[in-house]
Amino acid sequence: MDAMPYLKGVVPEPISCPVEVSCEYYMPTRRKVDLVNLLEATLDILVRAEILDDDNSNIVVSHDGSRVRYDKENPRSVVTIRPAREE
Image (cartoon, rainbow, N blue to C red):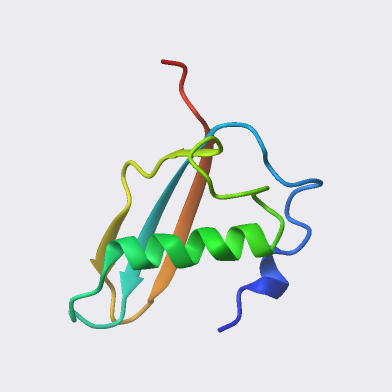
């Protein structure tokens, strides 16, 4: 399924401040997948949809909590974007 129609216009302008992006991928099979590749593709989509201004480390500072899970009946991706915590 193409996510772009659902993502366009979600935010009034692209996010350019530091954020934490966590992604949970619910896969329809138990096959091994590469989490880093899934994260990279997700960030590329978020930039293309103009939700994030860029996916560099000055904007996306963390992927904490990202993981792959199994859900045969309801495969999906859940993306959470939060302001980055001050260090």
